[in-house]
Image 1 (cartoon, rainbow, N blue to C red):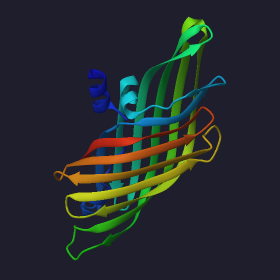
Image 2 (image 1 turned 180 degrees about the vertical axis):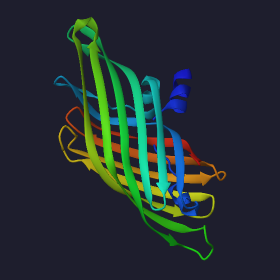
Image 3 (image 1 turned 90 degrees about the horizontal axis):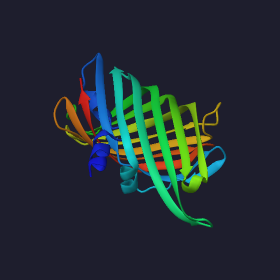
Image 4 (image 1 turned 180 degrees about the horizontal axis):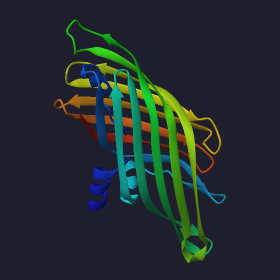
Length: 252
């Protein structure tokens, strides 16, 4: 229970009250968003030519998680913004199966760091009502890069296997966000981007999609509930990370 609790508090989706920005005054504004991504995994990983199944449910991921932390920061001035997002996880999983020499346990250690950096531009705001600062749709474009570092280790019982490997890459991305502000408190955000494109050591293709419900508690705090899916199609990891996310955003 302590494992799950610490993972939920510390863990892995970026929740930004994008649509609230239209009300903010001119000049710089900042947003910091600690969040917890309760993720499942579907796919494979390859270490030194050995491919293993990564399929893990959300509850299993929380059980396997040893440590995780996430957060996002954005700085905006007028229609231009700078963005940064960081995600780190350290997990360990055991899988037992039968072999010719008896039951074998395969232990997998996995360490993952993803840092996103980039910028955004607000294309425009479309009011949905006559009263200023209420219902509106906001359109933004986003572009930047992702740095990822992944380290994996596989070890089998009975001395059958003991290997490890690591790698890192930088990949570009381009995408956008659409924010729908219903009133002064409730907003919905749709967010997506694509990247990778096999440039250098980057994966062949990456896509990222998210839907967010944002509730503005006060002028400085928002609460967020979201669902995110991140798909990485590369030579080391070919997997989709998915699941709900909880977070809070502090505006200053």
